[in-house]
Image (cartoon, rainbow, N blue to C red; front, side, top):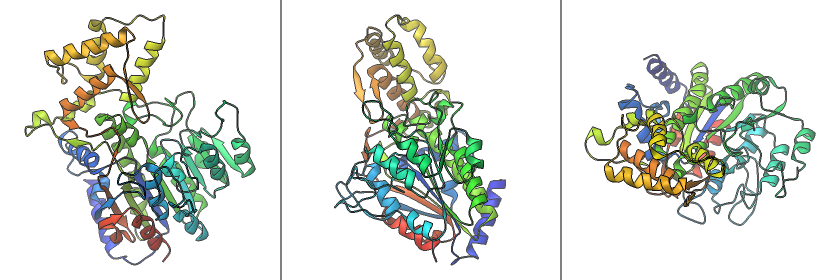
Length: 461
């Protein structure tokens, strides 16, 4: 109720302050977060959490849709979409900070830096991944991590945060000079959230290498991995630093592992990832309440991943999202643990009767997640194949799944009423939500190339 009243009060203040230029700009990008992902999360809020309001971004007074095609395809990748959202130019899939003719195009951060804005770039995947890199780098291939990292060292970014830089070593495993370049440009590299918040000058915050599931992700929200900073924590730390050090600032926050979960067709992890993304938005929104005449918040996505939809029939029993709270592990982490067991040649797999207890614990099997006789027989056969190390693999963008894991998560998703059309990106449109100074520009239909220009227009009046 308090949040609702605060939102109404903020809307009234904003209505009286149209035409002012924001000193503080927040740009939230949910990687892979399509309309179906948001709508399913809204349903979870309503039916499971019994919330009287949808996720905060959906309460913003301005809403629209965004087309996402790239210069080379009706289905974009994150590099082309990130470039469009950062620079306002279409480019080919795989390219960052260049147009389709490989000519450099520049992010709005360059213009904002010239206007004396401080810059924060935050993600819960790698800071040299496609979307964050689109705000500071220019490369013909998103896989040129060394070049991206060298440009990150030279970029005038006050606060850069994410999982790990992937250009620290070459293909042979030898250390590159990236760390020396960062030091030469007076960038403090830390894995401590408090140090990043209090650090003077430029800072690069990375995750804990001993905890990361891989060097491209800080871990899914559903896994609750302790020791790595969360997206809301990094947003708050960046906000603390920039509001202390700078008179005005621009902060881009990417919910990167929403996309990782969607590529895995892991509905529960997507919903929990969007909830964490929403919590990061709340950090910005609380700041907005204190500075309503000077702040703009824009929330959108780079593309849709997977075509997620709530589609299990007309009865509530077939669309029961309460089941996702019984899933206690992401598909990525589950398959990594399964792979570790397979790779351990000295470890004999437990019989199905014993392993089934794992599914009772981690998925609520028999309690909320029931299998037909045919479904369980099929799953047992898949498990026996894995136990016999006849694994079979299904390659996703960020992981390789054994057939047992893939079938298990497919059945669990179906039991919740969640379906997918793909394990890849789609050409579906994505949402945009906005509140604050200049928010009215984002209503109705937007091309993704429109978004940065509208932000720049609002921020440089």
